[in-house]
Image (cartoon, rainbow, N blue to C red; front, top):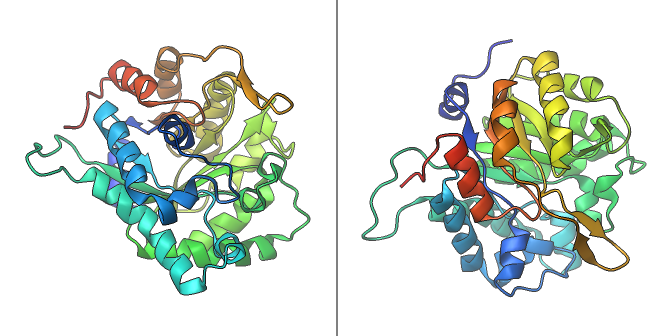
Length: 311
């Protein structure tokens, strides 16, 4: 199965590329309250330039790819806020536009030394429910129903012109199958990344079976994991590379654990730079961070991988 020969796919072949880190942690640090069903997507409506500022910080830190603020954005979620479909589509598309704005140098700044890529985030169905079910999967919906949910927003995001679609934090293989169906014919490459625990998907499926869902999909140019403990990454990278023969994407959390009762993070963060070289040696070509990972950690990762800031 040949990989598409688009610019992003070619960049993967000469990788590794550095992804950004968490969006929400940087917004919270800047004083924005994200206690909302739309989470960071609320700022598409209320404070779009705050999103641009975070994206710029990650590019400045050495990220090659930033991920848009559309993870928890959907027509259904916006409708619950009284936002009509046309406006919801505009907000979805704006997530890509804002990331692209951040990629462009401001007046007086030098041109980047290498390309800056924009990934449009597509979170799982459970993220829209805002009840934590994206970490469980098995929503009681068929693959067809999940496909009908995801396709409209994927069409809008693809039309907005991202370099790649980030099908991310997927908890089970059924939803992955629906997403893989949805990206057919959109004309934009995609990566597929699962959220995993204990060496399995969050729904409990073996990773080899889960990654196989995308093995024969030419639109999916990378597979892997995100929003997981760093200790889960190494074995997942090896399995993904073996099963699919595709480049692997890996962007775990900081290693801290969320205490739901205390509503606080516990434990010490794990440095991602040190194990990243091993992940790359095993097939990772997109490496970054997810929750609780910020520009400082991405800068260290970029330096470890020989990716100085792209300015």
